[in-house]
Image (cartoon, rainbow, N blue to C red; front, side, top):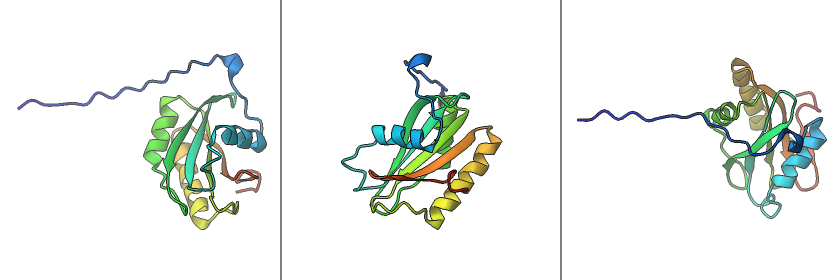
Length: 147
């Protein structure tokens, strides 16, 4: 019987130069960046969770769609979230998800998940800069609201 061991590679390939990177300076810039990359035909149809990956200067390294769900929610696997952040050598992250209803008020589940992610990120020295709830027409920033 042959032993099989999986090979795991940590690899990040960014083809954009530093001069092309978007710098996130506030929640509005983060919202505009997310909205530009969101499929506006489905934003009111089902919930998605995305993460903006940032370097130490808060320049965007990339964006990753972590999950797509249904009308009332989507699952977020913290292990996958941090695999993406670590593979890109991100120093900071900004998360966003949409509420298909257009209601921008965070649920208790949203608040608990945000706290759980922030706590886990501390161990990895990854700054959780914000969590946005977005729609076509506006956004809610956890950071702006003191959460």
